[in-house]
Amino acid sequence: MWPTCNLKIRDCLASTSVTLKQCLKLGATMAKSKFEYVRDFEADDTCLAHCWVVVRLDGRNFHRFSEKHNFAKPNDSRALYLMTKCAQTVMEELEDIVIAYGQSDEYSFVFKRKSNWFKRRASKFMTHVASQFASSYVFYWRDFFEDQPLLYPPGFDGRVVVYPNNQTLKDYLSWRQADCHINNLYNTVFWALVQQSGLTPVQAQGRLQVDEVTTKEVKLPAEMEGKKMAVTRTRTKPVPLHCDIIGDAFWKDHPEILDEDS
Ligand code: DGT
Ligand code: MG
Ligand code: MG
Image (cartoon, rainbow, N blue to C red; front, side, top):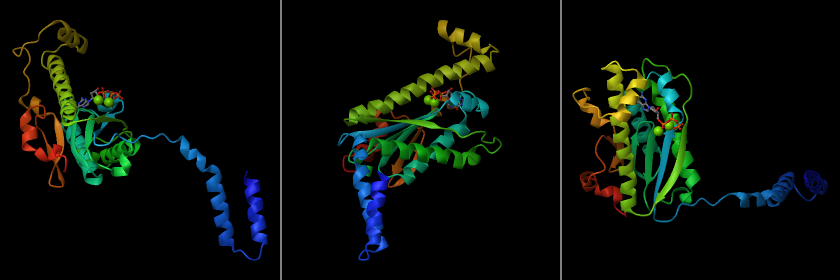
């Protein structure tokens, strides 16, 4: 295919009436028209109009990452605040995100219903959020983990889910927060049995499967309820919050998040 093109360009160059610039333009145009059909192989991943678009990121193999970087158990405040700093940066850098909610090694980002950012292409939403978040994680690491070097580059997977109305979006966020509470309760009791009661991890796991562990046995920290993270906007600036988003109070206090015309 190239020899044909080159021949045409050679003929063209042999002619005294055309300039080199015109020849190159002809070559480029021919190559473009010949190969452009491959565009048709690209999938259409436009998100359904007028729906909430949610991008959820999750740390890749953070079980290992948290061990290697000596995260405190069950919750490491440095890690949680770093995640929130990254979410805040994503919201500052990218358009149209109305709220972000995170726990553990994951963060969800909600784009406004009428966003037309990158023509609503799911791959654009997901890859921009994931790359901005991951680079922020490395960039801000030292601000949160002063004495702990970053030993290898972390990665995050991403998915896009589209929710058709306010109720399904609220239920999605409630689902993530309920998941946070369940995991947090389990992990807190598990590590209390190991760290305070001297059980081995296998023994603690066994106790949690067969028994009801009473609050007399393990002392749960008062701040346990505070390990959930959200970032919303006050006017345009993203602000971190640590609050309940399952109940109605949060949505009453922040009507602008679900406001159709926001
Ligand atoms: P994945 O997501 O399939 O690649 O695998 P993982 O290992 O990331 O699994 P995932 O996302 O279900 O669980 C998150 C892991 O991260 C879990 O092993 C606990 C760990 N992790 C997250 N935040 C903290 C923390 O603050 N402290 C400690 N010690 N571990 C944490
Ligand atoms: Mg993970
Ligand atoms: Mg996770």
